[in-house]
Image (cartoon, rainbow, N blue to C red; front, side):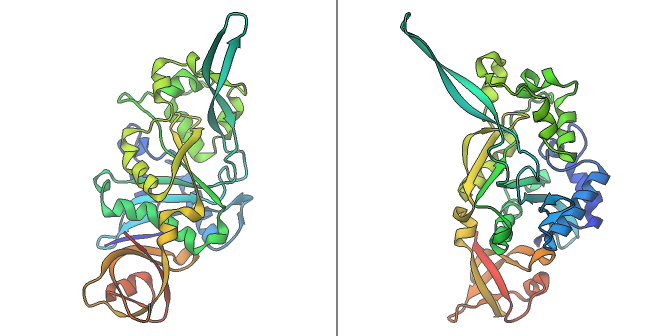
Length: 342
């Protein structure tokens, strides 16, 4: 059985295994998940303080980290995070893609030129982040549970989060590890490769990158052909997550990741599919079979738990679930849970 719960200090070793080593598949897809023990331990500590309801933790807004656990083995197979405010107290930088029209009235010529503008307009939006899962679970119910459980957490703690929400999708990275957009632009201003810069941002933030990047608009035509082709395109391994988020109601806008030019998805928080379709229910009795498979979440703050189970509604509007789910959620008859269809 799969369970999404708060990350704990004892999970550090297993999360580091998921983060992977340089060049591994999971390492390439976990850009906001620190790969250093001390930084990861601090991230978990910050998450637990945030879950305890502290609005500002160590001078930074709330940040949350959850894990996907196989309850049969106790093994952790994935992580998923939420930053209550993108940027965490600093500007949250992206590129905004727009266009300029260059025209000569005398020659009767005009041309449209795509331009990238440095922007921090998404600062303080709620941000989904730190999504990482073992490769064998991609395209499974566990994959969907891990991602969508965050939306149920937001639904149960709505006043902690903003009206708008965003998520960065990792951009194109070639088989040899090179990143066309970074190699064509960012690398000219830093004496480091993409992986090194990415690790710095996992420990610190992207602010240090943005502060050293040129503040001027970047003409797309000056980038390499490979970099131009990569604009707004997702890494092939992120497609399952991209498709899931689109089903939630996220859409790609005009913003691109400042590192790899991957798409930045945006949505209104209150319009997210899981949030809209979720319902509060009261536990009552044991389900002896039948009913639909649903996501079910319970518990506030650090006690938050979410799993998949077969549920049965009663005529009184209460809910019956298998006995083992009662124990897994730490709830009993009369307690409130939140349910969303799969």
